[in-house]
Length: 446
Ligand code: NDP
Image (cartoon, rainbow, N blue to C red):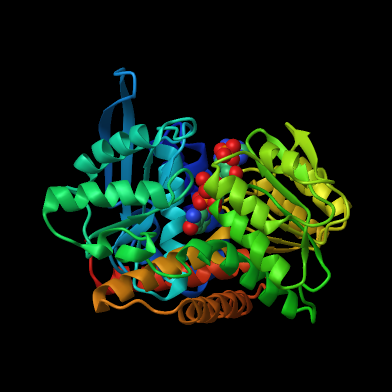
């Protein structure tokens, strides 16, 4: 790293102790900006780097709630409003026991560049709680969501900050959150949250958008090599919203997806994942991958094992969580002949894993580009809410497809411009950063 960039990264580490994921996300972006800063020294003169790594606002709040037995619990809520240069803060809410300020800051920081790449006029933010929805009744989840929103409602709004789902936050949670917001404000502000149900402001295609978009991005990457998904074998990790629809779309493109996983282990399904069964087990029964394996002849349950050791795949789509592919897992992928990694999850590859991809010549797209279809379609939901319209599934997915193609081409053009053809990491960071940095300069020192 260049000296000044190194100093800024060290200052971020010193100023934000015990936040390793945030340090990692900042380090990855700063490292790839060297050629951009050499070409555009005004970004250094205007202290854009020092400003962009500091969130505009960070909220931490108490979330008390009562379980079905009358016991009182206290969780911690977060909302980090990172950067509003391009529009209202936009980014999901994550409910998972691992959530802390550093995780939310890494996600919020990534979101700035991702949202810039979508071209949709949205700033970057992220939030969540260390609440674990697993094993809770619907009523318990509702009471938690109501308590969480009672505080969050003071800070959000359709033109201020627009949360959505992420890990542990799906349609059920968005419904409870919206209901409480509406009750507190006495306003039907449809555009305050995205990922709503279809009957009251949701967008067709939003549920599918992140998984579909990731596969669309992978398809565009393959096209640069004169290849397609037809006949390819694919590893997918995770079994939540992103994974389910990545499976569906990849198989619709003629690929065979042979794996899914959750935090207890993975499933190898050599005949190809049965999408209808997966959807039934996960979305209707709220079950685990073990339930899928039990119901699917020929599928093997691999308790405690990740998917990356499965042999014979051409493509890997990590769709679970951060740092799920470390150096050893990346070496397994390379040795087993995987040629392409496109990230449905946020930051699923460690920096060491990314070095392995580079050395092995694996085509690699970071989450901030490859999974941007989710937030892009959230912005399409906001457009429909403003116009009081509901577009058809094909209209929304058609727009998503155009957006993913545009993000892909934008990344490659920026990689070319800064002398690293085919480097999607540099391309995504350079393009997202420049758009945000230019807006920050134009809006003055705020
Ligand atoms: P879900 O909660 O629907 O699913 C998450 C999946 O990942 C589950 O299978 C879960 O297993 C697994 N998982 C989560 N945490 C861990 C962990 N620590 N170790 C192992 N497995 C884990 O979330 P999403 O599908 O919405 O999100 C998946 C990823 O995609 C996240 O990185 C998210 O930030 C990213 N993303 C999501 C978007 C969206 O629109 N939803 C948009 C862009 C990115 P288990 O049930 O056992 O916890």
